Image 1 (cartoon, rainbow, N blue to C red):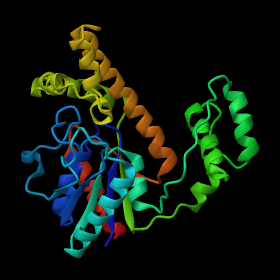
Image 2 (spheres, rainbow, N blue to C red):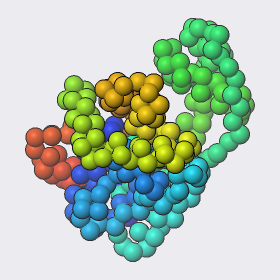
Image 3 (cartoon, one colour):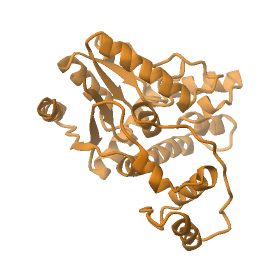
Image 4 (cartoon, one colour):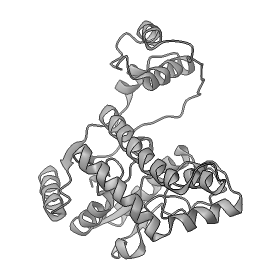
Length: 293
């Protein structure tokens, strides 16, 4: 049975699409968002509500305490278990989320290697690129992508083999259909800005204050966009409007980084979100999946 994967940047309609596909293909939904696994972190992470689930079974949401550190290794194990359970029930696993590394770890023969980290902060992009080409002549990483170049160099230091070879060696373990949702950048950013307003209407300030008062500053709490900006507001380091604008700005930047990661790491079937007629988007994707089966 094919797995359906729905991914794309924040604010593009992944949750809504997942419900439509679950209804159409007798599916159950597995979360692939690294922040939505945590209990209580609901508004900041745009977690699906019980009403929005429409009776569809959802897995790997709200089951980890915010004091704990849930790793990609644990997600790989848990997601594969859920895939097996869902398939054994004769249903379709639908993996939904924007954490690309989670999806890759679950579906590919992704191995966890020793990690070494060298500091290249004193080098220019040209110098880093020269080092990278020396150890990995086949690299396709652009000279302006400093983060990926450094990551690839550190991969070589840890594993004594080029990162481009790792990419060739990676094999998918499950028959899957990958759906990527996209949107015009200007429209998407407007949607993100509006969603930030809605999050505050739904109680983001109170949710952040709850964790602030508990004094919890774990990776879980400090990773999602929303809490750390409001913590600075509570500490009187910035005013409310500055905090709100930071949340919107960082959300837009995060969406941009997600696009880059997905395009570099996955071969997605991209579909543009029609915000005015989402049913049209759903039908187009459903028809595509039916042809793929």
